[in-house]
Length: 273
Image 1: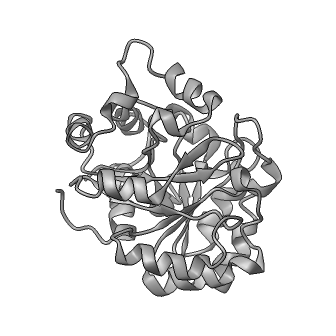
Image 2: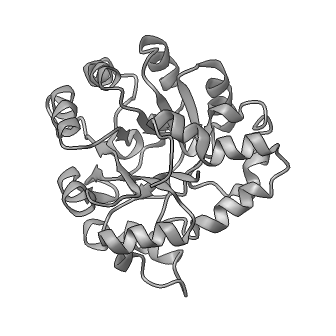
Image 3: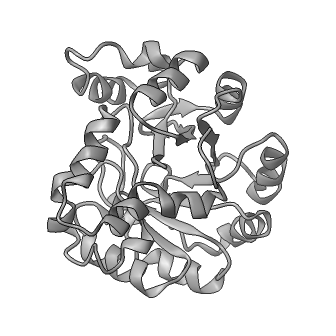
């Protein structure tokens, strides 16, 4: 099973110009990524790329990349067989995020992504603890953007994976994913934390697959704690990324775990669509 844990569902109209231009820069000669964002077209695209399931993401970051609402994602993509929808909450916008995640769970969402560097908060802030408690109760995995960003307005100080050490300790039954693996500054820190905490995973979206062993020399040792993601549409050619991981000098069990088995365990999946 191949699972892409990181697919953005923002239409061009939702994005700030710099974010739309960033996505376009990857698609020269490949077609128009925005045209694929229709339910049947996207399901077919994932099938062509060899992806059994993908985690589809909204984003409420008006200061940086733009706004793709939970409502848009649910209404447009709720019928996609291959998409598993995660929600996004901006703690500056939603006054009671713990109540909101319960409402969104009733609408079919199955997890949460947080964007501290874009939404400007520390992920270990005590104000977020009711939200984490609600996600733990619901069995929702929580993705947290870590590391750098190229977008104007992002504040990198909020992206240190070390903040999730405290959250992982205080919520031992909450599954947490360090999105982008601490990209740039904190690869070693993110890998160490993934090996330390049973509930903390390394998610490698947006990273060149051929460089994963350069960034994470202990990848084989921690392979049960590593999850593949593409960061689509900013990293198109999902099949090519999968094949690049398959060419790495890792054991076959490690490759299977990274490309799908770990994600299937987190998401409670046992078979393809």
